[in-house]
Length: 444
Image (cartoon, rainbow, N blue to C red):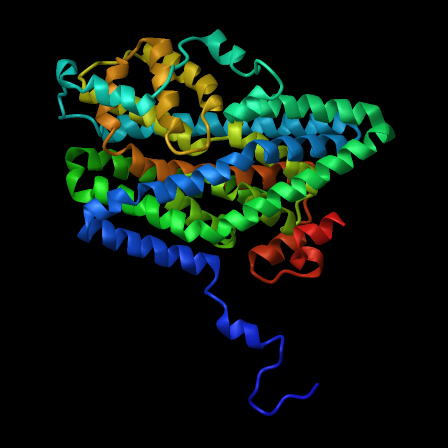
């Protein structure tokens, strides 16, 4: 059909009426939220439910997504040795990355001394505020953490949203399906359909991401405001600087040796990073991250195994926070830590950091569990962080997201499951071939 000159075709007409892309929408929402939080703090505080609602909607889908993707990833490898090899390489990198993050946080804490000069007294700290923040039992020992990985029942892990427990069930299910071979094909196909359904639901929820980011950021700025941070501002700045240093140096150098650029990766993930900045939760972009890594040339089975596992075992931002915040508390309370106590604290953090959920407040609860287990510092000292924990939550989530993206690319490269040329083209913004296809098209 011919159109008069100047009149758009049917395929072109809707484009003029489209809203800006999600990246632009979230950017506008975050900017407006900051303005509102500064000008009308009480209004910003009242908008907290909008951010909580969005994060809760995403959290509902995380357990089934992790279960389906990990189980399918292992089952489709068919070769359990290959699955074990990929998983082993992923865990090796996760452990190395987490250890470096913990060490960097400890180093920066000793160099900058963010807690020095506060001289806080324990008897003047607010125990009630800490209890309200934790709002639940905190595991105290090694075996409590280990036993916490095993759910009471199969469905209890899904009901409580315990990602480590869901991951354990997914690993067992994937191994069982792989051992069944062709007989398990109908079950694998069914899991594929459930996975597509969960991703479809998340895609619908993502349409309200700007609203969620607006509510969460307005609450943060309205309640705390940068001007109220006082002496705690040094801790916030030190944490953000350490997170940036870790991303650019540790992750950047590792990615460089894999033949890719950390800067191009950050630009490629700009939408996801902005959503995480607004919601303080890296879980909000889990499906989008997996899809983008597949588009960038990572083999699907590797992505489906490494990314969900990384969300429980590779929390680099949380690791930095744990050691830096621990030293801050010690310095603020004038509690000297001997080298042996610091090493003991670091050893326990290597375990407890693996159980930190990738959601808002997970790092705070994990730090409480660590201090309870080591008895090196009073747990009540955590009240010193209540006013700024939300500000650091964004950096934790952002660093966790980048760490998992880099980790997946490294494992895929190590496993020869990465199309390096395609990855370079996609990160440069010039995708070719099947990189532009949708997830559903690739699945078919």
